[in-house]
Length: 218
Image (cartoon, rainbow, N blue to C red; front, side, top):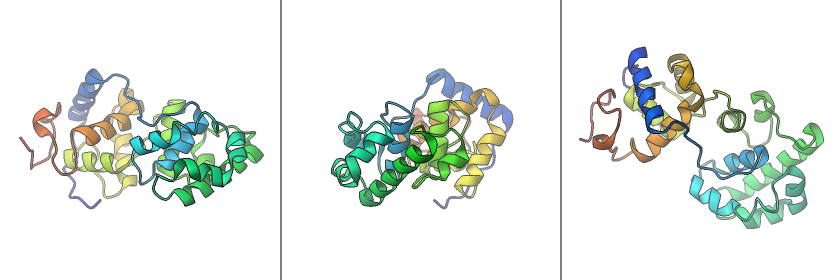
């Protein structure tokens, strides 16, 4: 993920960036399919080093039979593996998800906790996963920095940083409060579909005149 960061944008420029993102897509949403907080947590856990499309394909048959920790335990690790074997690292993920279900049943009455500390204490759940769940399910302004956000943040100057933690702090410190809730969704989608890694679509970018990227593909 090494990349020379662009200079940090000023407040007025960042405000205009997110005003445009909001105007183009007022309510951006994550692309992982889920039915409740638990299926969201499992989907995000499965998405590590995998695509959202690949996870969705695997879970469409899983959610009808295992949409609670109790049902996941009834399915068992072997049964879960049969549903997710097309996803990278599926054996380790299955082990973590079953252990996670046990903890949720034993310690949380089958409910997904809504604090970052409690979430990150679960097997297979890191800060990024916890932030996705906190943001999407509970509407908190938690910033889940992935490779897309890291690239966009450093390339454009919106939220530069040497690592994902620094980029997360840059979003929290510099993005105006009204845009905090959806900031990571706008940045992920921008990186996934416009500000792509190899051939960014700069000519179609709605913030190209504000972006600090020196090698624009116009």
